[in-house]
Length: 431
Image 1 (cartoon, rainbow, N blue to C red):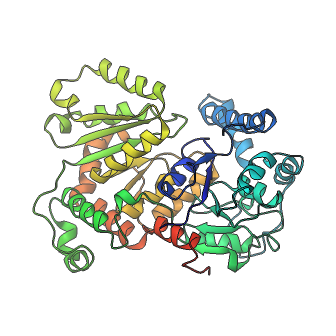
Image 2: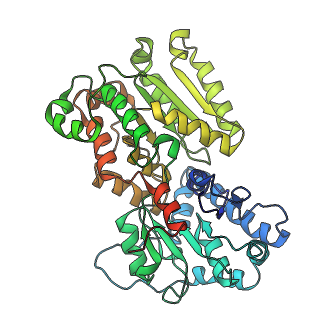
Image 3: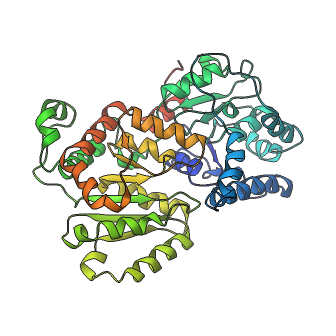
């Protein structure tokens, strides 16, 4: 029987919730939203709501001509991640960061931690603030924090890392090294990889994942350019390849939780119209749980007045609940061949052998995620969208996407969920 835990996220965008979703099954009484749980004091909720509203407003405001970029850049400086080199001690903190601790010391989060302390299971948070709250308010059980980006700012580490007992699950070695720079002790750092959905992986032998990647590679390497060069590598990792894929070539376009960049979806459809008409590609537009984004996609597609054979090759992925959306997404991703998205937490889905086409970034965090994808050959930067009909299929025919898929599978980390569960159960040691 698996060790139960308090699993905590914040429902501010999809990132922290998507990180918690694979841990369902070990969570006690469901995943808890630190900013929106039953009985949360008005004072606490107001602090969280103000933070969420500000972030979403800034993300949208960035697109306002002239002043939008300037205002966003000012906000972005507050989240700055310092250059990694030269290696140095980065354990200092800024005034804004100290303000968060001031709010906690004034009572923010005390109600939640006292509530959970009545049953001191391991506490696993996908955001650093609830972990800080747990430590500040003397939570009696183990405290874990899942890092959900490839590289992180100083804000992820506690005020005094050398004395902290918060334990971190790091998705990349760069995140491990950052935590060390910020003063977190090695015994409190676990290199796990990001928690990917087990329904896309299977057990630790990766039986489901390997089957899906084989079908994906057939679609991504139709001329067997990549296979001709790396047959022995593919066979060693995946075994015999199928003669035909179990699904049509599929491109998924996923916008962020705030709905930014959704307008690009129509440019993709317009650019690939001829290919869809000839049954060469299927497109999935991810609206998530945002009804207004789904409505935008529905209305925009109607205005294009596409014939039925093209509309049959367009799917809108939507559910009114976030959990429902994640469940549908995890199923759809199994038969997706290329994921086009901004470099958010979805960057880690490259570990499923899924090549990423990288949308323009929003903020420092996504810039670092983008660099990680490109540096490791897990993702690519697109050419001009008006020529998508040409370059997308050139990249397929020359084996570039197949190369990204295998790089992600071999060099990425797909067993994060399994490792996190083992650590919580006391079956794996830190660095």
